[in-house]
Length: 416
Length: 177
Image 1 (cartoon, each protein chain N blue to C red):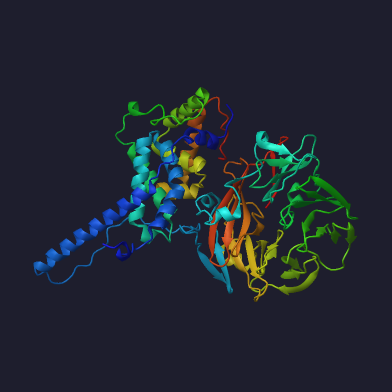
Image 2: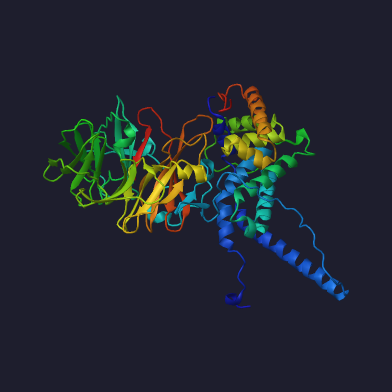
């Protein structure tokens, strides 16, 4: 028998029934509290009748009082403790183990993200081939380890009967497979997927399984995403950005910065910038962020309401004030660019770059991945969380499957 | 009385119930691992939730998770007082789920529970907190009301005993140094 201790404990308790204890406990708690109030009223009445005069001050009977803790504890409704750092509101995210106790995102059905996110078991995975494709809108794409090296995409459409593997596309990513799928890899119509490869971009149409490869004269391509005009793919290499028209298959090399989304956060000469882009991916403006410096460190995501969010390091003032060094930063591009900061906890379980923005949900809710080490060096825990940037609430959305290295297994790379 | 005139509860029922429902299964599993007995585990969780519910207006904005765990784990450790060793259950006290019977799986569950029986109540609580709930030693010390050093020493000792009790399992160091 080979298993880590956590798995053994999971096994030993996995058939414990899920009993509903909450509602009866609440009724019992209220009943007891009412009984105490009635007894108190009777005692008070008795004292008054006896003509008791004066009052007595005494210590209250000590009850189990939560002690102050250096870790942030999120309230039951997902509200986080906050701090102000030079005019910036900082929300203190919980420790990774406490993420599992966050409230569920209340409109989860609208997100169409299952509680457990990952490529399904091989047994219920179909293959995309010439005989048919996936007509339903895609919600996620995963990369699984391919036989003989590289990775295959697996397409997840919540309304489709199967998850679909695409053996015709083999992803070989020289700079880490993590960057092969980014926030804009799936088109806005949710039917097409673009994947960067050294010297080319690969466009997959899930509806008919067609795969189009467009050469791009850049052997360092690591990022590719759909611009908002539905026809342009924005690709980026180490030093250059490229605009690829997937209809004409023409490739342009603009002199200025490019980005597939409406806005992003980037670092320029030591200053974090909020940059805005046209629907075809070209730069339209740039402003420095207000407040203490932050250093964007992951791809950004923006929405049509003007919000942009991305992972960032939090040096200087943040570390001094709240003793936290990284997190997620959200800025509204139509307002003075003062960020709102979701600061990740610190500790041995929290790796560098632990938060990665995945996309926007409804009502100014940004979806992001939180990564942490499993206690005991037993792999990485990935969770999809939702941060309501207006209300300052944090929710859990999904647990992401464990990554593995064997053929057919989940690589850990995915996009929503 | 007309329902519409029913005085409002000081705190919405839904909030506590949502909170507790999100945690009740994890708490029940943890209590079961600590006690090895489902009725006792259920009683402990119910008691902890009732006490939490009574303090809900005060605790809800603070640290309800720490609060309920302190109640549950300390009561679970205390529940062993007076329980004779021969009273230890050897298997589940509820109807087996309606699933294909897997004798190996059932035996492995019992094997793990028997191994946990080799621990002291506090060691057992430390094991459940650390490896089932994935809590750090600082949190464990807060929940159990002991020092971090004590929590660490309990974890080391418990791991050694579990290794002895489960010789065919590759438990490793469990991340302990």
